[in-house]
Every structure is written in structure tokens, then in C-alpha cells.
Amino acid sequence: MADATQGLDEGIKALAHPVRRAILAKLREPERYFAEQAQPLSLGVCAGQIEQSCPLSQSSISAHLAALQAAGLINGRRVGPYVFYKRDDLAIERLLALLRASLDRPECAPEPEKSS
Image (cartoon, rainbow, N blue to C red; front, side, top):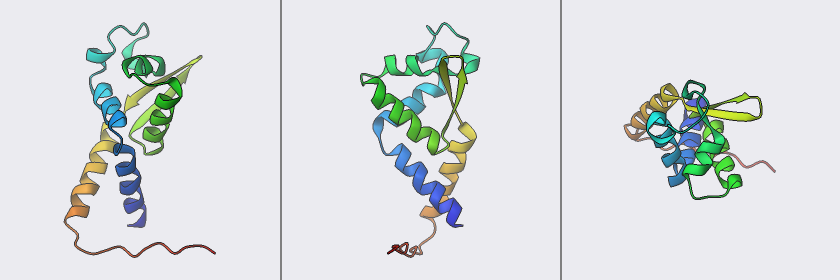
């Protein structure tokens, strides 16, 4: 149960930023938002294309992609010098199910112990 709670917390943290939610929304319909990509969308969406679609620095977008990947909501794949990203819709569905279940549990979780 602790693993599920940790996964839920990490997923919620990843979704807490509006840019990350926008990236996930765009990756849901890559044909609509990234049709100009030279490489086949079956590989995923190139990080450079994602960067071009958001008015932020490359380093900011990279950090957002890293947070989404760490939470397991997207998968990255390196092909030569490029990294391509795809949404993990199954992981997103699992996260939503965990969230729904947690909202039905009235018990409070104990605070984690602090290490000295």
C-alpha cells in the first residue's frame, strides 16, 4: 500500500504544474499538435518539438519532461541524438484509479519519520 501511496503522491506532484498537464494533453494527440515533425510520430514526439510548442526555455521543458518521466506518466526513447516521448496512458489510468480510491478512504496516513 505504501508503494501505491508513494506513486499517487509522485503522480500528483507531476500533475501539479500546468505546463506538465499541457504537455500530457498535447502528447495525447500528437497528430494534431506535432504534425510537422519530420520523424514518424510512431517513435513519439521529439523533445525539440515539445520545446517549440511551449514558450519556455529548453532547460525548463527538459525539467518538466524529466518530472513526468520520473512519475511514469511518459516514456522517453533515445534515437540517435534525439529523445522521443510518448504518453503512458495505462499509467495515467492507474494514477487516476489510485486518486479515486484515495478520495474514498477517510483514514489519515501517519507522517513519515524524520531521520536524525
